[in-house]
Image (cartoon, rainbow, N blue to C red):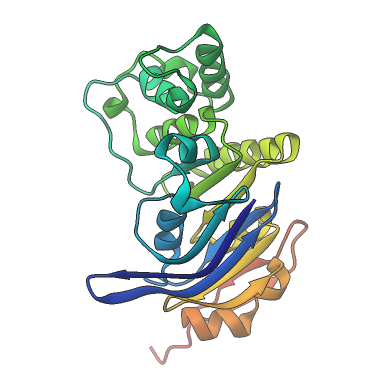
Length: 258
């Protein structure tokens, strides 16, 4: 579904992503992890068509550079870390924006489009907020609305940049379980970034560890979430505990003389 080859992104004269190659099969969930400044979000923004890049990005067999904005929006849906919150726009109106790539030029949303959005709002426990202005919601509630808009696009590739950072533990599970359910039922392909390593390992089929803009490890969670790799690239003391759905990463307090 997605093939990234030798991706390089230079911003302000600095190389943020350096020759990164990632492949994601249809229906696969791949999560990019790494310390702050590793280039995780930059990779997603390049795949989403937001940043200029060198190298090659192929989506569904087509070169990204050859896709029109409308064609890309039918193929790729994104949830950014800090999306713009339009003043005065209701939750329903914002989520309906996800149907824009499917609406004829100069046309308007159909009853089928509205049904898709209402279904997504229900799945994300947002029905009661449909008429509320988006800016009046809490950060976590807004985060679910951003995801609702992306899911309403019904694109085969979903990009999630720290999708649970503003959510409480219950809604983290709701969001991730929904994405995983859609992935399994509809062969939705997911490329995500996450800071929570235990959650990343629990849901992803494969992890890609970035450090200083380069891939330093890649593979199943149990091969990437190791004390040696995390200690080296995160400069952190951790203990790895085997879990039912992936390794659990537990920070261990550094020794102190006090």
